Length: 366
Ligand code: CA
Image 1 (cartoon, helix red, strand yellow):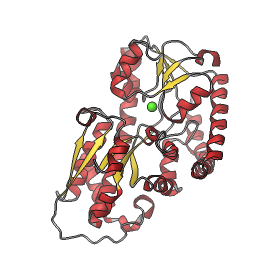
Image 2 (cartoon, helix red, strand yellow; image 1 turned 180 degrees about the horizontal axis):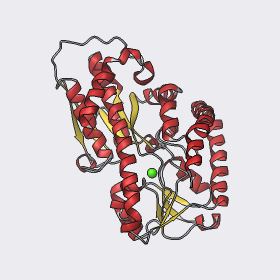
Image 3 (cartoon, protein in one colour; image 1 turned 135 degrees about the vertical axis):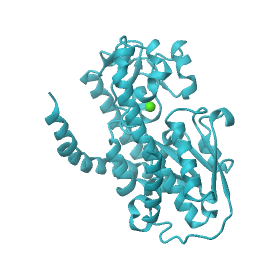
Image 4 (cartoon, rainbow, N blue to C red; image 1 turned 90 degrees about the vertical axis):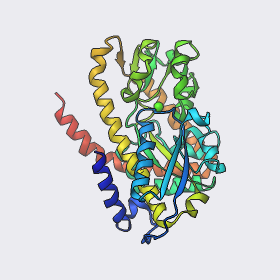
């Protein structure tokens, strides 16, 4: 797999000028330089040391960037254990304390509301729809518009695919069961939960199990079977609900723009290519781990009760979503532009998903 990735990386790099959708047109026709200067870039990631899948993405990225540049790019990755601030990545990269980051855009909604839209939106696009939006539907351009105000650039950082709705200590039968429910759920989904009466909060990965075990929270969402099972949540919250809130969670690479612009053109191109390839690798790894763990889950953990919210609960969440999106659009012109871009793209791409993947899957159901 890794060999294939490297070959693909080189092929992708060579075809840079032929594929503006993936690689933008910043570095069109970049000359390969004879400059042998070694550039060392520091990357801060939200995740603890050796965190599976997410941490593999930064390791793959560092290796790809180094291999593709013939050793001229050296990426030093600091995990949360080193820099001590899981949710400090935005400020680290903005200030230049770190050159690069790996995290999730929706963690920064308190710093700039328009960063909210680039991870995954509740009731929004699936992973393939959202990837198309990023690369061909104007998503990257909108992300550039948002992040350039902070002296940064954001690039897709790997998708977990569709996420599960989370672990609950009690069954959710009606909207009333959400009243006062203390749940770890970040991003816009947290605001939707608040709108229907729950008490959302965001807690970093390393503290989730303890928070649930000690009753600081009653429920949480993290990712899905790819990462949830090893966290042990099922031991303290047996109800595992299907998803609605993060249909396509995309992590992000952050780049300090001043540093980026100081690099030779070929290294800028290699940097972006290595990010996108490691994002691809993370997505297929997530799908693989989810399928593998889902298969073993029932056998190894028979007490997990897999549930889907009843329709009235979905309906309440959906109306809260629509109401809050409208309010956001009315408050901020750039939010409005992004919300409309996503809604228009979703309508178009979903019509195709329905007639292609959905029709196919329906025809296969027994
Ligand atoms: Ca999540």
